[in-house]
Length: 198
Image (cartoon, rainbow, N blue to C red; front, side):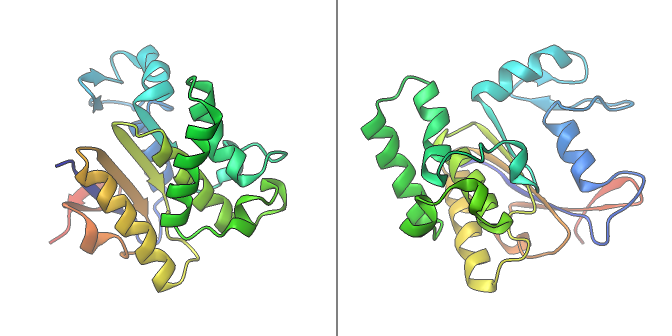
């Protein structure tokens, strides 16, 4: 079984925000000190290896999914794209993308819509679906349930829990506490420090 970790940053904090923490964990920013171990690599000592990890073993879903999605493609094409880049046949990539999208509650109408004409909340689900399709060993997500109703949030978190149970490491950073009941390890980020939830 993998680990499902939830980091809550209630209200945000100027010293160390949840997004900065996410970027440090993913090897996008270098911390002032300490170490960040991902799959046996200390990203603070071997910062150059972060790019290689992110190509296959480490997936990140940002709060703003527009950073990584291609606006001129359909949502389905965006989910399929990294699979095709890995050499997967189109039919197989499409079947995987459709299955994951359905599990996350994305309708066919949304899937065949241009990503540029899709609202931010739906784009975030598309980005999560794309990350899950790659089956990375480590998945880091910023605010997966923001602006979602209870039912939609539960659907997302149940699928992330299943993903973690498939021997994957899953880290969620968020302002709200929605993910806490699904997590194996629960932390609060406050005053620049990471503390376990009492």
